[in-house]
Length: 314
Image (cartoon, rainbow, N blue to C red; front, side, top):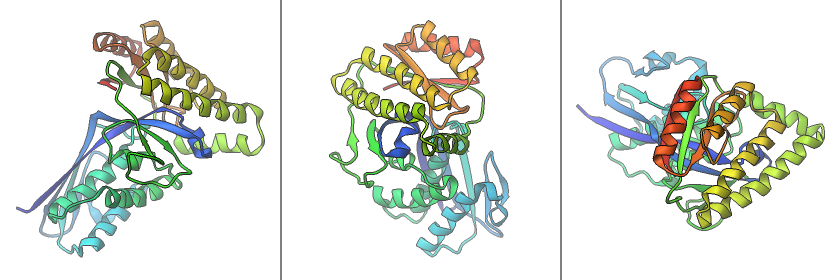
């Protein structure tokens, strides 16, 4: 039976979320502890989608995943694909947690179609298809999630710069940190990205001094964070994560529960901790010096009530 398989990893914004919407840089990292796998097989009868979020006829996909419907139509047109199919999507990336779930699904599905048709897929082609789906899903995405689907190292990214596959400007590929470990904890609360973005935008457009100051501060912190990564200073990066979280609190996108988890991580020995992603729910991240310390912090967060935790080297 003819088959195509595509895989994609998750992502974490290390620093700079929300401020990136206003043209300031952000730092993001591929997160390969979680992944999405899409399997496309030929089928008789009607095309079907099988996944945790929908199981049934492809033509009856609900509006909430219209981005996936749009993507598959684009891919079918690209390949003049008329044969009915079964599309299975299995993912360990929790949805609506700021970990790039929708971009990973789009990336995995795109790779599955290209693999099915035994056609090489360039990074630029992948970006094109994932961006199309992300625009439907999020309205005006920053582009970070799409670009990270092509990367295995941290990046410095700015929305005002054109997406270009390059190891020079405008997208800077950053070095791995040799001794750093990242803890990601799921608060158990669905992130409210659109609500959070609109909340910050409304305050920004009203000239709210705290919001303008916080965005400016985040820009400074991202610049310092990039330098800390370049020289491999974990301690400095940890403090910058703490400072970044305080600025995000000023923007009003954290929650009391997440703030408690962040305090728990710091008390357990984290060099720094902050919310990550759109906010008003979702995940938090913490930085540790080594793997045993990271595992201990993750266990403390789970004991405090975190829905799930992951540990990965930076």
